[in-house]
Length: 337
Image (cartoon, rainbow, N blue to C red; front, side, top):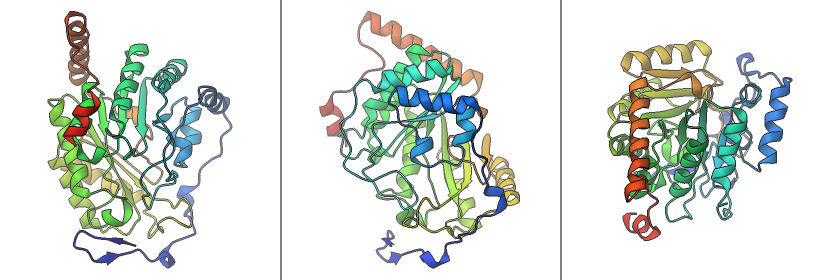
């Protein structure tokens, strides 16, 4: 149960949960040796992947292809979203060497596309933004040709925190809308629909357009088709051009119920509609998640060249005087919130 913006209580009746999963949601168990070698690598470097923490249904496939989404800043979240399997608890202190460990993992796996995400860290003055920045820079220093995608929390819409991440020049900035506006107060702890749209729009503006912005929505929580189409329009109006659509699946009986299982044909139709509206890349299907086949989307060469040029210019500027990409002092980030 939750409160909508007007103060009235809204809830999804747990009795509506559909326990029987359709055949199209069946996932094959891992058998490729690459899966187990990747699992060993992650364990060896003491890293956390959202693949396992969020119980992603595609982790067998992705890991077998030597891809993974690294979750930095710990495995305890300060929020308690109704859909998410990640534990809510007081987070541990940040690990100073984690950015280097993530970079080493991407080097050993020879990734051409890496996704860096994190739990919400509302306990930190910058929401973990500097940790994102340091991780992006560490990965780029070891793997300059790797496409870097970040999947970030909303940082409570802090301009300084967002700028800190954007200064590190990721190629793709991803922040999930997760659901339609009506259901946001119930589905997303402390989050706001308008705030997420603002974060996405600000990120693109701060990069002067030189970043691809991406967002994802879960289906099956009781949203209506017209509400979903409105979310498409809202994302496009805020500069988002890459979209993922996937089926919500209940992690445990304590989480929100699945109201409906969306058919593969319906997902295909939503993809056609989203592309017709103006998105340049859409991944849509029952098993699609934000990071699923993330490497299938590659930003335009002109965008990649522009980002690389800015990074090189920043390095040249660093040698001359003050770095273009800089870690902001704590008081600046605090004052901006």
